[in-house]
Length: 464
Image (cartoon, rainbow, N blue to C red; front, side):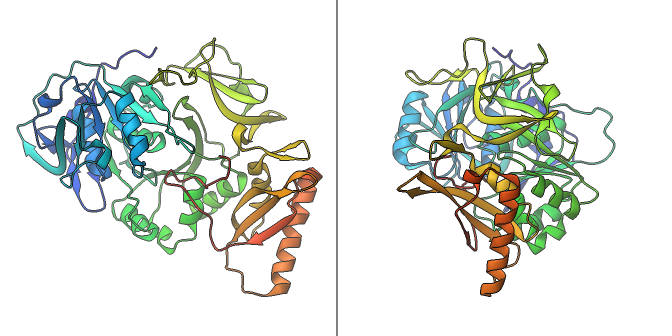
């Protein structure tokens, strides 16, 4: 089990130099100001030892509440937006929530009956920050929950910050930004990196158009920027992408294929481009900064270290102090196996001296008894210079059970020319035939104007 951190988030803000901010789309808060006051409508002491649902609609107030209540609360349950009331009610019951932190507009409907309600705002009131911060707070992160109520992974601040390294000799200014929501694991990781590293952080907002968010990132001088490959594909075709000039570009959350890595390197020639592997349960596994998709095979079966990884039946498994402690609640699956490894559900394939991600265990398409990973086909399609992104899915077939079809978004909208469309489809299919087994080649290709992306920044899949 991870050891308790000797610091709370409040301790990190107390050490931040003046001039560093948390910036939302409508308000900003100086971290040094927060160290001398409180954003909560009641004293943090009123919430000592509580199991608290952080149910603010705005990410900035979520960030402020987390800073104030780490070490004070017994348990912090991060509530992503858009949870159905029935799921949230079950989460509240399982986590034994007895208090909610919300915006002045009030808490989510399912939390209105809780005995203790505290508001949080972006206005810092001096002199109210008095509370016992001696607890090891449990941080409850919800999995993506594509079907049914999300599972609740129990983390500590130590497990959440285990991968963060701070350079004490850093000379250049650093400002972190993200496309993620900090109430999900990927976004929380970047928020914590900024806080622990003593830098400013620019938060995203689901209600903010991509162009406005990119412009705001540029205005605040973001130097380190993160998102899923889907986030980045949409960002690169937005005119406002020219407003930013990051020194470090990072991808995670989905498979980073070579096409998106190359496109980012071409668009930001002065930036370091890397991708990271992490999940809510397994924590941060590794970072790859060599510009190539996949990861070096040398990372597997290295023996004891900060992170141990192995591959069993083509599935990646991880054991480290960064993994979640357990799932909250009874009757669910075990988080770790008998040896302490978390089964990530991600399928990898060894080619030469490198492992490549080929898909998720739950996303396999069965074509006449043969397994097909949609992401493997998408990686081939995305290499075509006229393709922005693609989604491979199954279509029922009376002979094979399923066949593979692909929806493709082009860099330039299809002009309606039948000859152009026909030629493009032929080129894409030819590339698939040259790289893939016959049963993996799409039976048809359809050009579409866009693809659905979930609130987590990942493409919406039928079986994800």
